Image (cartoon, rainbow, N blue to C red; front, side, top):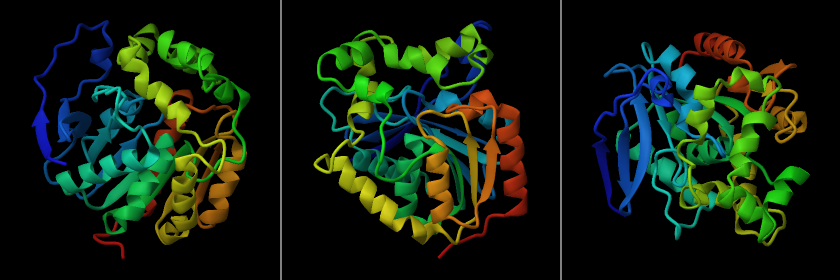
Length: 312
């Protein structure tokens, strides 16, 4: 598929608007005629790249505080998966995990990213680690935050309810309840989300058409072996030990009901040398619930493990 890089026209933001919290230049990669939006901030000749991969129903806005903190020293790249954020939201695209991985690989190749540190949360774990397995020579370190990259052995009832054929779709895609519930149910301290931040999270998902990706992400969770993504997750899971030689940090909100501490233990089995940080009073959106703790653990990890030019 043809690929073309471009930069959007800069959009001014009023101080009260969510764009004031997201002061980044909008960029896009054209994949098969679709706009794949990403942020690319930092020095022109960085020693390394921090590649931040979001989940559902978040988008690159989720990483705004980390980008603002780190862009003076590091190249910070944060894409929006198709169907998410400021990327296109086609109604007829596949929205399968394997295609999200493929798009991220295309971005890595198009930008010629090297010495990558993956920073991933939620579905970003499977997408980012899937890309790392496809381009292992480009990845030097992994920072995983309340995510997964293996076949699910449980799916919370709150997620299962969103998958029901009619009611689930009306709730998630029609009324936007999944996105709105995330503002409350993913954190121990939801009051930390100001009205301005809440508007930022919800802004890209303001209609039935614009919430198609949110619903399709939920539908792509494999409940049975017959689901196509069950096999994709199985392949990623089986190959994760190939990345075990890289430094790994695991930062976990221990009060996450979705990617529970059992998911953390699974990663520890795969990456036994990982730096593990259990944040007792944080939930699924650990970056919002415990921003300072995440920044501190990540900066300490990056300092202790300087990225190498090439990992073979």
